Image 1 (cartoon, helix red, strand yellow):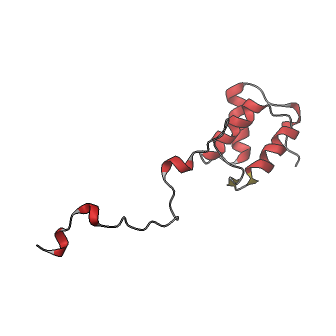
Image 2 (cartoon, helix red, strand yellow):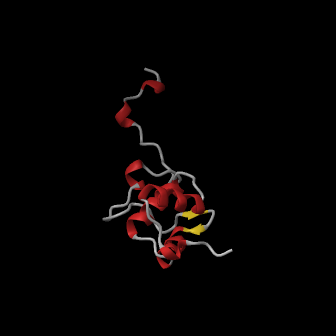
Image 3 (tube, rainbow, N blue to C red):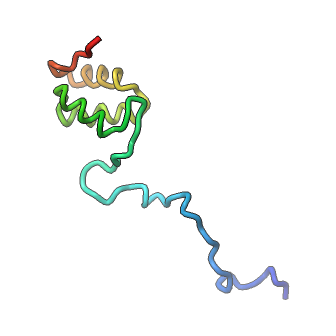
Amino acid sequence: MSRFLDHPSSKQPPLRSNRFLRPEQLTAQRPGRAWGATEVFAEGQWQMVRVHLEARGWNALQIEQIHDQMRQGWPLELAENNVAVITGHCPLRARRSM
């Protein structure tokens, strides 16, 4: 018998690196949004962007919608505009200083 036809159970499982995560490891096991604090966009880290939006008067639902827009590739300014159009509301302090 050839050594290449060994029974599969006699082989050791291949070594795996930790470079790639299994899909179940990509989702967080916590309530609420599964996205972590390490999300970084062109405008900066998401937690800092979120704090800035809260300070400017955006409510939690609008902030989540802005976050979704940014994850789809929209820059912050356009994401804000899109959410304002979708919800029909923007905060009074939402105007950008020039």
